[in-house]
View 1 (cartoon, rainbow, N blue to C red):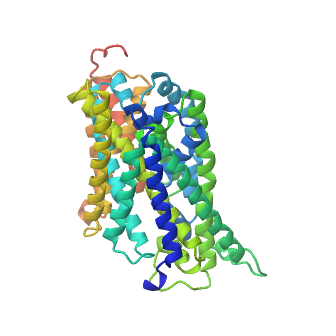
View 2 (cartoon, one colour):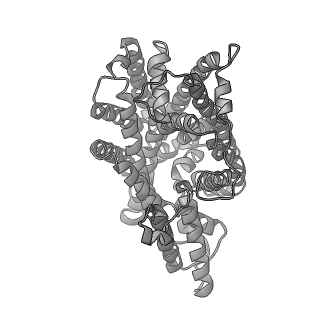
View 3 (cartoon, helix red, strand yellow):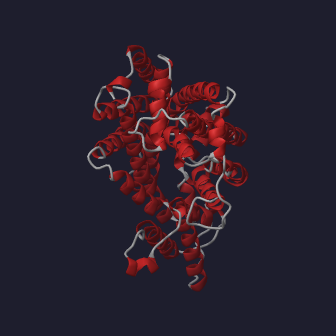
Length: 496
C-alpha cells in the first residue's frame, strides 16, 4: 500500500500532535504532586471537561473504524445501543452518583466491599485489571495495524510509538493530563468526523439521481428486525445489550466512575455525565451516517477487490479521497481515539492497584510520597504489559478473539454484584461465590458451545454473542438470590 502512505505534511501533523501531548503531560506534572491529584485531579475538573473525557472513554479507535464499517455492512442497529444510554444515564444520575459523591469514593469497587465484603472488591478489582490490560493491548494492536496502512514504519514501531507517548504523558500528568488531553483529542475526533461527513454529503446527496438513494433502497437506515429472537441482532437484542452494557459502564466501571470523581459536586457530576451523552449520541449517528454514505459513495463501484468488509472501507476512503493536511488530521484523530482510551485505562489501573490491593492488603499505612511513586510505577507497569501483549498479538491474531472471550468470562458478571449491592440484598460470602461460579460457567457455555457436532447440537448455544454478558449477569443474580433464599445465613454487619 505504498501509494497510500502519508506525505511529509500529513506526517508532520501527527508528529506535532504527539509533541503537544508530551508537553501537556509535562505541564500538568506540577498539578499531580499528590496521590489524590494523580487519581482524581484534586476533584477540580470542570463538568464539561469531565463529560468530554467520559465520551472519549466510549469512543476508541475501534469504534472509529468499526461503527462506520457496521453501517456499511448492515444498518443503523448500533444506534439503539446509544439511545439506551438515556434511561441508563437517568438511573445512574439519580441513584448511583449521589452515593459516589457523598462518600467521596475513588475506587468504585470499595462500594462492593462496604455492601458485600472484601471478596467482592477483590474479584471485581482483579477482573477490571485483567480486562483493562487486554483492552489496552487490543486497541494498541488494532491502531498499529490501521496506521501501517498510512505510514511506512512497521507495526511494531507504530505500537511502540503510541504506547510510549501515552505512557509518558499519563505518567507525568495523572488524571488531569488524561482529562485535558481527552478534551483536545475529542475536538480532533469531532472535527475529523464533521469534515468527512460534509465531504461525503456533497458527493452522495447532490445530482439528479443522488447516490444516497442506493443506500435507502438497501435499507441501510433500518434499526433492525422486530422479530422476537435472541439469536440475531434484532431490535430487542440491541435493547438488552444497550441497557446492560451501558449500566455496567456508567455504574460499575472504574474507567468512567473515576472521571465523575474528578469534579467537585454532585451537580457537576450529573452535568458531566449528561454532557457526555449529549455528545456521544449525535457522534454515534455521525459515525453511522458516514458508513451509510460510504456505501452510497461506492455503490456504483470504485472499491478494489482486496476490500472485502466494511471495516476496511473508511481507511481506504481516508487514504485515497481526503486532501493533504486534513488526511494527517483524520489519522491523528484515529490515534487520538486510541490514546484517549489507553490513557484512562493506565490511570485507572494504577488507581485500582494502589487502593484495592497495595493499601488494602499489603501496606495500609503507605505514605503519601510512596503512594504517588507507586501510582507512577504502576502506570508504567500496566503500559508495558499492555504494549507487550499487543506485540504478542502480531504473531497470533486469534489472540484477539481469545482475549475478548476471557474478558467476557471473568468480567461479564460484575454488573450482577453491583445490582445486589445497590438493592442491599444481604448475602454470605459463599452465596457470592456460587453466583460468580454460575456466571462463569454460563458465559463459558454461551461462548464456547458454538458450531458443535451433530450429536451435540442439543447443547449448542444460539444466543447472539453481544448479550452473553447480560446472560451472565442474569445467571449470577438468579444464583445468588436463589442460594440465599434456600440457604439463608446470618446478616452481615451493618454498613460502615
